[in-house]
Each structure stands twice: as structure tokens, then as C-alpha cells.
Image 1 (tube, rainbow, N blue to C red):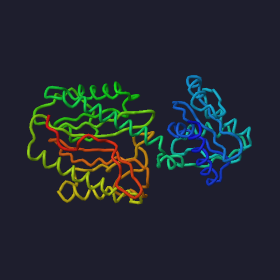
Image 2 (cartoon, rainbow, N blue to C red):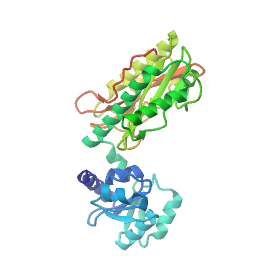
Image 3 (cartoon, one colour):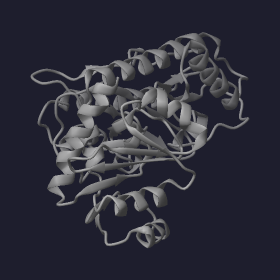
Image 4 (cartoon, one colour):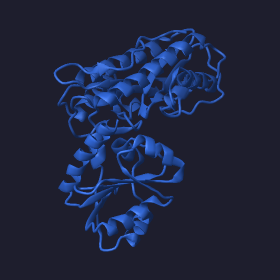
Length: 361
């Protein structure tokens, strides 16, 4: 799809010009992939503001992939990519080079400037991330598949979950199913938190066996062609205590309020507040300390962030998660999470379809 990446680069070039730079050095991996199509752990792009062609550098491990996925770009195969592109920037007579200051370390910047002759560097910031906020049809289609694979994996695993299974066993089954169904890999390390471990939002699965009366929170997602799904469901094993049902229904109401607030033009902080107010009104403000959600795409956590104090407006075709939770230390917790896409003139579209009713296994 070279035409898609070329169109993205043209939009990025406008941002380079607005930075009053002659070119930008793109070094963040997801941004390189967004602009070129190349997935690589060692790649960078020299993007001129106009005129000369963009120059992609990567090492020999990715030469074949670069020739296949970025055939419309000039290509350099070099182990030390940033230094080589710095030399090329000097050779081209670039006067001002923008760099991704949020991604480049001080040491790397020092090495970069040592190779630049007569070239000044200026911070570019998260300009490419701002382009990535709004997804095109291709991106949304990939994200939809990633969510469908996640839903399908859970549907396969749920019937087999029982008391005596360990958290690690359940996590392994989810991971294996996502890959068996077509995921590249998991989008992140799967979380399975049972009983009191459910009070830890990012608990790492252990050998703890699931017990009758446990709430079990499963936070997982599939990666499909570079795009990350992220969903969470909390289920009960065998029986549900009144306090468990109470906090489950509270979180479900909060999530519904947050999802209902998602619309074109809404402030990110207002979406968080819509859900958080429900939890605070029930007296659980101390038990919901993380943000309500985040963007998803080429990264599992990307802009926009939905949290208290967050600024900025959401717009059409921006995918986000909505994931309120209540966590009671020593007892357990509940989190429910879905991926939605903001749409113009209507309610946000939900990409994850597994029921949000409390399931008792």
C-alpha cells in the first residue's frame, strides 16, 4: 500500500515545514512504520520538508522486508542508521533538522550532532503521533480484526475455566487461542488476576489456583498486522457474593456512562469524568485511581489519553478504550474494558463484542 504511506508522508512534510525545518529525522519505530510500512526494531526515516525523496535506513536483517514494504523509498542498509542519516543530511545541505525529542536519548542526540556538519537540530516532538490519532479505513479494519480475534479467543477459553485452574494456565490458553486464530502475537502481556489479586490493576499471572467465589479479571488483546486490541472482562467462579455483584454493577454503570460520553468534539477529561463521577458517587473514589482509557493503534497505549486533568478533544475515527475499575485491597476487583471508535454525528462504535453481563462460570 505505498500510496497510503506516501499520503501520510505528505501530511508529515507539512508538519516539518510548520516546524521551520528542512527535514525531520523519524526514529520512533511506530512512526517509521506508519510513514513507510516497514516494521523494524532498527529503522529511521530522513523526511525532507519538500524536494528530495525521503530516505529510509535499516540494517541487513530487514533489507528484504524494506524492499518489499517500502519499495517506493530510497533505501540505505546500514547497522548504525542514525549516524548514517546524519551524514546524509549534511551531504544534502540540510540547515535545520527536526528530531523526535520525546524518543531520542541525550546520548543518541550527542552522537547525532557529532555527525552533523553545519546542521542545527530542533525538537519535532510528537508531531507524527498527532497524525496517527485519526485512523484511516485500512487501520480501522485491522483494529477491527484484532478485536474480533480477541473476542473469539475468549469465547473459546471461557467454557473451560474452572476452580483449580491457575492464573498462568488461563493466561496461556488465551494467548494460545489468539495466535491459533490468526494473531501475530499478543498485543501485551496478558493479565489474569483472581480473588484478592484482582485488586492489583496490572497483576502478573501467578500459580495461584482459581477458587469458588473468586472474581477473575482477564485483560488481554490480539495484535493483528501491527494493530493492538485491548479488552478486559471480569467473571465469577461458582458463586457471587453480594459485595461482588454490587461493585460489578457499579463498574458496568460507570463504563456505560463513559461510553455514552464518547462523541465527536468531546473533551477527553469530560469522558473520564462521566465514568469517574458514577464511581465517586458510590463512595469508591479511592478505589479507582487510574485513567479511564487510552488510544490504541500501532501502540497499545497511544494518544489520546482519557483521564482526570487530560485536555484535548476527541474526533471522528479516533479509537479509544473505556476501562473503569473498582479495586478493593485484600478482597478483589472488577474492570470492564472495550475498544470503541468515535464517530461523527453519532454514538461511538464498539469493536469488542463479548457480553458485559457478569458471567458465573
